[in-house]
Length: 214
Image (cartoon, rainbow, N blue to C red; front, side):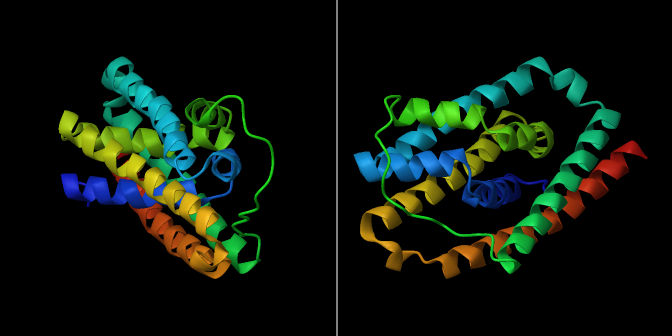
């Protein structure tokens, strides 16, 4: 399934998009910064977010590549990453059904003294969900991409960061032009679609992990 550059780029984009869409500190600071500074604050926050993620990817490939590419380790990471994706996918669908998901584009708050780029870095690091994602799903993707060499890693990271850029740009546009452009109904529909995609990919990751172990 994930044995081509196109497949890695596409699936990393969808998985990254589903993660970016969930409410959290990066979304909150994006809403606040865009309302105070304008549309460009959204892409600048993604730039800060991308800087810390690129640093993490480089660190993973340089410092842990020999250990991570052993089959038992790859298998364990695949299983854990798969279970985490299943948990995320079911959770996203459940929250939509129970009415817990809403995109609150509420203007207000004070302009951050950090600036959009630094705010993107700090809110990413301070988010426990972000650390857990990279320790499981992100790590599993890095291992898969490494099979295709540096170009595989480049396609993975490009797909992943593009999802953040697309989503937060949409949020910035919606905040600038009004809620009629992007309603809660559309948002919830996208969350369900991404949740179902995560469930399918989680099954694939877990199955691949078990195959490595056995």
